[in-house]
Length: 184
Ligand code: SF4
Ligand code: SF4
Image (cartoon, rainbow, N blue to C red; front, side, top):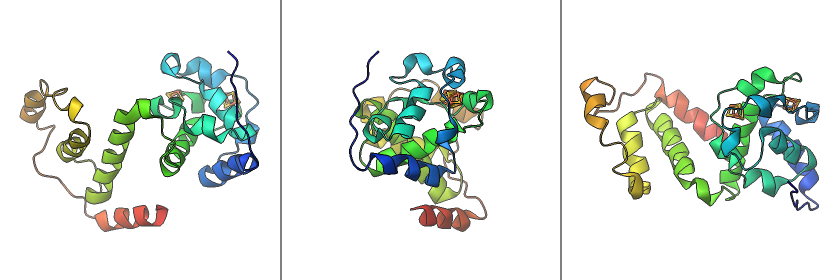
């Protein structure tokens, strides 16, 4: 498949920025494809994990940050463990997700995932941990079409104590809040 790539004068800065923010040396990747061969979600992705790395290497910022792949990645770390060059691809996907949101480039086809991602982080920021019911409440308010999706399993989860009505804050939640503030 041929891919049309748009490069401009800021392209060369992209790889540098990704490397600085992630601490990962993307230049080390020699495109062997072992990461892609082991990825359990590759069949759903628009670009393969090794192609995302290549985009970063050549400064194809828009292609990397608008890809569906960075949102479909399940962070299972299979790619990271398979990589002979120790490129931490799963962590790299995480950095690309944040950059994609910051630049307003997140793929609109993955709106459910990006909304869930934000609700997940908001819950951690507020309570220091996931508060499932509150996180889901925020997510479903923003994505009302998904409101009825999990209703069938809700009673079962509540009866088994898996969904608490009240959020449980951790002791050091102020520390977590400060970490978020520092990152932001
Ligand atoms: S396994 Fe590592 S070296 Fe091979 S393509 Fe993937 S990131 Fe690059
Ligand atoms: S971490 Fe993401 S890219 Fe890597 S193998 Fe798992 S799903 Fe695929």
